[in-house]
Image 1 (cartoon, rainbow over the protein chains, first blue to last red):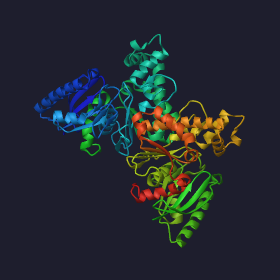
Image 2 (cartoon, each protein chain N blue to C red; image 1 turned 90 degrees about the horizontal axis):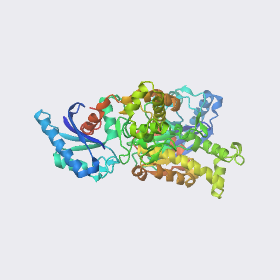
Image 3 (cartoon, rainbow over the protein chains, first blue to last red; image 1 turned 180 degrees about the vertical axis):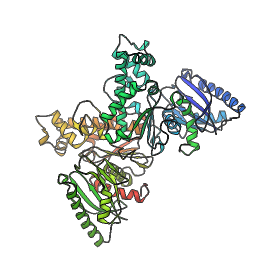
Image 4 (cartoon, rainbow over the protein chains, first blue to last red; image 1 turned 45 degrees about the vertical axis):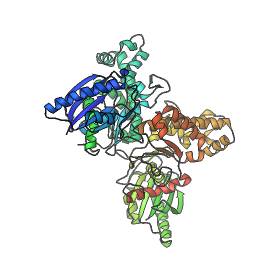
Length: 313
Length: 313
């Protein structure tokens, strides 16, 4: 089966043609520019999708289904987008119905954290596991849960919003909340933390995570201190998840892939100290095996999951 | 179907004869006295169970199955008890096999937090829900999770150990961990908190939760301050669970039943402030409907769940 995947983010949108084995055949991307309003973004999305479908047809890979990965909150079953913070103006947008109408293909929509969890469970570091936690750890900090061998969405598709959990009463702010997990461990949070710890050196305007990572890898003590702090907060959140959900594996995307043991080593240390030993010993904590490709593969997974009744292909 | 339920706690053990509708027909209890060693406790358990079975037979209610509720960690499938902190010396005890041999009935064993979750899901405040969090909030602080309409045990039967999650880097200690949820919100924790906040008035040796509750209900400002603090920490943990698991209902046992809005009102306020609005609005936070009977009913639920393939009866 061939799938048209749409990975709709606040910064860029990718249009993928792939298949139900998680292979990506074609990809194009454009800036989402959500400030121009939903209608304009949606028109460009459909135009680019139309092009991708034409190319795929010529290559004898006509997509049978549309699969969307997008930030929450949303109503998965109805396919309605409910004012995600990274897409201002997308208020109660019936995206599934609009895409089905415009592109004349059935459409499945999934929360991006859930789509990432499915991608790593189907094709990545969590293959074969029944209890999986996936964390995005990118610009934002979200998650997706596979529990008892099933995607777990909760009562109204809000499960996995772990970035919103608060770990300290003071500290950087994310999503209006000081000291939340996202505020400490997202890309945005890390840059703020560096500026907070070393204001003279890393003002928010002249700091990026790759710049900090290079410095840390070159032995810079300040940069190492930033990541050590991030790792401790990461570990504190992981310990909470290990004690609460006793997962087999926690897969962390994006920044964990790029930063590796700069943050994962201190995080694992905190988990081993903080969480109950039997649960901590049972849980692997690993970067996403799909690496930088995870967003593309994740965009295909709403349709793949539906095709397989929720089971891995 | 009639069930012999064993509710094995660190202080007392209850032997129940009940049925698969959650009705309790007979009950006897004895002090567990775990310090005398496993063998002696086990002998008394079997003796009392034997008596209960005889009585039940005379009343034409012969139990067909044994059902145990006991503190973790344990291996549910094998029925092995793995050194629970409230039962010193119960190290790798094959309780299921021992009980089956001695009492000549099949036996099912469940973690007491999970058994409580099943009891409220089958017969209490969570009937009809698919996503349920149950919290014990007694002498200790544990939990059980019903997710996607199934008991969720995790990778090695450790899921739901939320009492171990840390919310502050300082504060009272429980299970060797300062500032854990259990340290703030268990019965033991509440007494310690009162002694900590008002040392001259409520030393740990002369304070109990019922005494504090009476004072608070009579308008005592100090006692109200203790419960307000407990409620805030309770709410902080509940907000974490709401953001992570998006449950339909959180049912809280024991102290929440006895204290009611003294702790639940401030807790709900914190959840509404801390958790994501869509998830917070969706979630009821209620005391256990089975009230003081929950331990007895829970003791029956491992067998009832097994009898029904995991579904509610």
